Length: 73
Image (cartoon, rainbow, N blue to C red; front, top):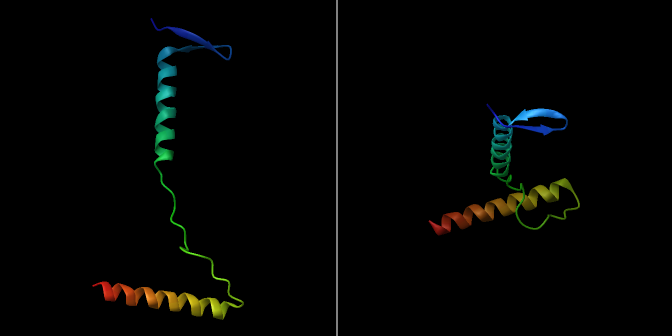
């Protein structure tokens, strides 16, 4: 015989309540461990007046980062 509880006017078995509790904790744990997505841009925003200027700045930064990586090796 299973112990029953009245929840919202319905009789619910203790085993059902335990399965719901464990399932809820599992879902919360899985969602919380999902992690955050990496931001696309690291550093300050580029305040360019045109798309060409923005592309030039991004290319320059990328080239400087590649040269810095080569210097480290």
